[in-house]
Length: 318
Ligand SMILES: [Zn+2]
Image (cartoon, rainbow, N blue to C red; front, side):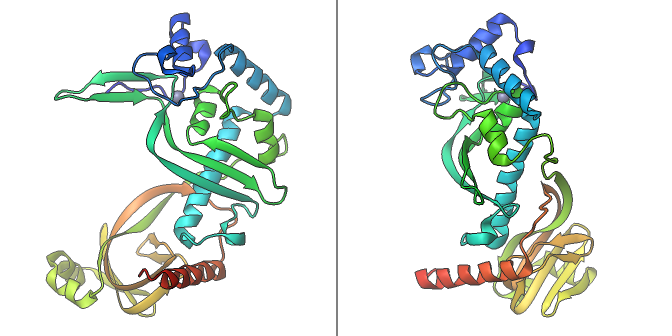
């Protein structure tokens, strides 16, 4: 594998390399650089020079007092916060509970294939056939971010935050171009805007394999027996018993228990959002996630869970 650069600006490219990047960006497979297959439409209009597009957008943003990096940070944070909210509230999330920062609704479509960044793209043969692809970024999603208070929205691909942060590129004259001034307006950025919600490290208990029979699973698994004899039992909620030992644990509930608030168990966080019964393995993990300045309330989590369960019962799925 070849190490891809984290950032690559056109000022760092020799003319031959810049010409190659532009070839990858043009629409039409016959005009693209060999091997590279980004999208039918490409990233750059037929008559555009990449350097002109980037310089023009950088100048626009400088006049608005906003950096490309700040836009990328906000786009990543809004998409990330929406995904966290969906994991917490379930797939029935809509209405006010689905709004990030109380304003933004983020819709995401996921595609089968992924689109590689055209700035750095290298194919190397793999022993035994096939090839490795090294690129500086890739994406397989499309997003619509809509401010429900104004009705204004932005459409972008999952590759956009990378293109903007690592290359100051918003795309040229294609239907996928994200207009920088429009992004500033819709996101409400400007000189007075604060920083995007940051990524923070958190230690959590991740659920592993589970069993509906909590006593049976405890009796048959050697590891769970050991946990039960050596681990320290805790009862963070009435009826929910957790044994922990170092980086693993076992969680058991003989009758269903709704976890509606984050629980602190042995120095790690157990996320809310599940109605749990039976037994489940736990693994201690340190993950990064966005700090949500306006997290959903316990009542909102409870209500979203209730609606999701009612909808599943209606469809006849467990
Ligand atoms: Zn890139």
